[in-house]
Length: 253
Ligand code: G
Ligand code: G
Ligand code: MN
Ligand code: NA
Picture 1 (cartoon, helix red, strand yellow):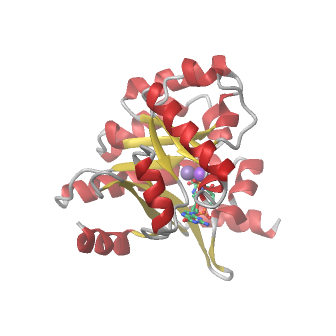
Picture 2: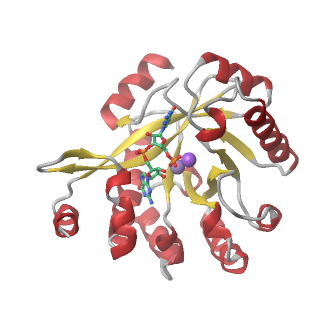
């Protein structure tokens, strides 16, 4: 309960910050985007990872104002980078179930794009398989989001208890292979089979694929050999604040 009242104050006092983790194209080696990941700079407890407060905000509804703050901050950052002359890159933002079900979601995102001046085609919204269980609702919502010009990806792909029906019905652009399949990719035959099946299915469905949680050369080589387009993980860098990302990016490209 303490954390809950702290959260309300944190929203007013802007105690949140975004860390950015790059997505790298495995053919070109170029950074093609970043995923924005929220952290809470708690005045007493220090820097808190999302796992320690996102579930609570999903329960008490504070995820709605927090999610808007995240979207706005991420769009402003993307716009600032482009205004500073950086080659345009994608900005991925995670949506929670409650945000996805919010009636005004599409209007909210539309006005955030307008207010921040961010180009819609560089915004990628990450949803999870569980959010697609009501296929009717998801189809309609995603279609409206696509009309705004944004991209849609399925996060943690392969870990949800969902059917594959949605893959042919929903207007999605990308699958992000959950890092649990990537972790032992080169030692575990089952993981290797799952990953190659996902990349080949994605190719046939004309979807992009990103492998998450890439930590070493062996995984990277395997993924490149098996037609995985993009990767993300500690191998490149952990999620870092905007200024550190700018430095990292400059020295890399
Ligand atoms: O950064 P870290 O690995 O601790 O993130 C843990 C989880 O928190 C991730 O699965 C990610 O999807 C989620 N997360 C991070 N930032 C956000 C956010 O802004 N909104 C929502 N809904 N989830 C987020
Ligand atoms: O569920 P989602 O994909 O949004 O989660 C992203 C989270 O995964 C980030 O919070 C980040 O800290 C974590 N992460 C990113 N790269 C790696 C990695 O290479 N290894 C591990 N163990 N975790 C990672
Ligand atoms: Mn994600
Ligand atoms: Na994930």
